[in-house]
Image (cartoon, rainbow, N blue to C red; front, side, top):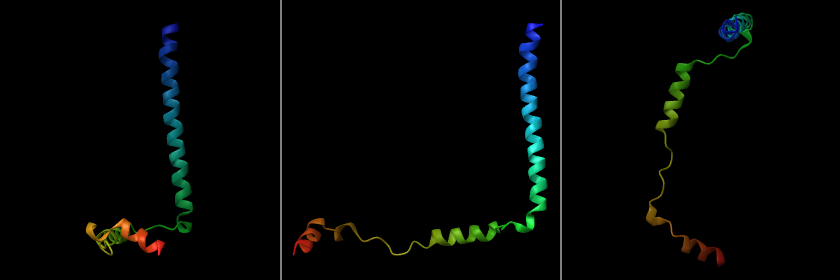
Amino acid sequence: MSTWLWIALPLLFIVGLFVSALKDTKRVEKSVKRNRDKMQLKDWDQQERKDKAKEENWGVPPAPRDSYHPDENEDKKDK
């Protein structure tokens, strides 16, 4: 009898988790269907195109490494 309890109780707990998860998903689906007109949905294709355009436009290229001299900048500030 004790062995059956050790097997059955955890299984019942796991089954209960799955059943409650299914109930929650159905509840969420119902609320989404009801409130769909209030949501601000994005067109993901357009969003991806905008993101790609931003990635391609790097802006101003960085200055070459030789052009930065920290000692010169300090001298100008002191004067």
